[in-house]
Amino acid sequence: MSDQSIVLSLPYIQGAQAQKHVTHNEALRVLDVLVQAAVTSRTLRDAPADAAQGDRYIVAAGGLGAWEGQDGAIAVFEGSYWTFIAPKPGWQVNLLDEDTSVVFNGTEWRVRGGGAGPSGSNETFGVNTTADDTNRLAVSADATLLSHDGTDHRLKVNKADVADTASLLFQSGFSGRAEMGLTGSDDFAIKVSMDGTSFVDAMRFDAGTGIASGAAIQSDSTDETSGRLMRAEWGVLREGLVGPLANDGDPPTGAVMDSGSNADGQWVRFADGTQICSLRNFTLNGGTGQWVFPQRFVSSGTVSVVVTSTSTTICRIATGRSTSATRAALALFDTDGAPTSGGISAVAHGRWF
Image 1: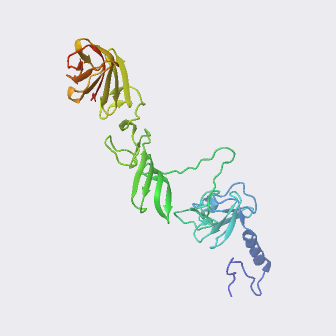
Image 2: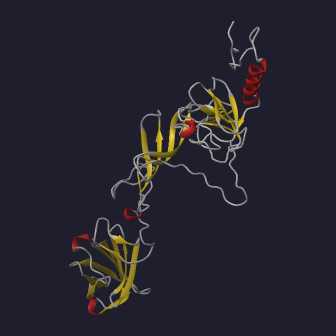
Image 3: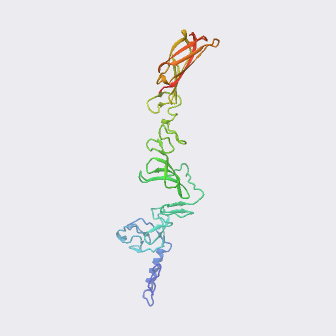
């Protein structure tokens, strides 16, 4: 017959044994330590100088001094010396300083439920489902609520390095379909996928400038792909609807349209290159005259001129043609085809670039 119990290794009193009380008391001492087991801490490597009789600790890795070579053991202060009990798999101990319990798995003490981290931590935690080493926090529910504790609430997703990923992944049947966050850089990206393997950058915002790019954004000034968002520098809403225009790039810079007037008439320019000049209530003496455009056109070949008589009582024929990029020849005739004096209005239509 063995002289110790199978589970707790408590000493048995042997037949005809002398001083039976010694063996009995040793068994009680071990039970006193292990029943309703609670230790002060599991983070110390060396025995505390202020320990009181009966204080218990789990020796942290790398034990020193009186605790050397006792890593993971339960240390009990007997008043003037320490005794140690080696744990067995499945033993459970309450940690007073962490307000939690740990279980010995045969190698290390782990927070009940899977944790082996610092105070108050769990390595895995599952709610209505099973967590694992990858999905250490897992929740199976119709909804998850994260609420404030008086004012604000912020959800933080942190990554180790620029090339790593910190994102939210949206799945269908556990296959990724959309992702947003910092994926492989510090730029904020929104990605989509049809198969969970190949992802397309729908939109990416530069971390330094905030400028957007991606498949959902116009790629250049000639991109007319349906459904894409127009970039300001390549679209019509650049610096406002009305304002200065300049042909200093492709496309020109400035607003959508510009307009003005001077002694030679009125004009309006558009960002697509269209220019319209007009002349009102101009008198032709002798039936012919020159109109200097209020703004020059790119060339005479791009200009068409329409002239009308301003007379409401006499039938007259008005004509006009551009002779250069800066002027047009105007004429007014009576019904017999003879030049005649009178008032006209004219409109020239062409391109300014």
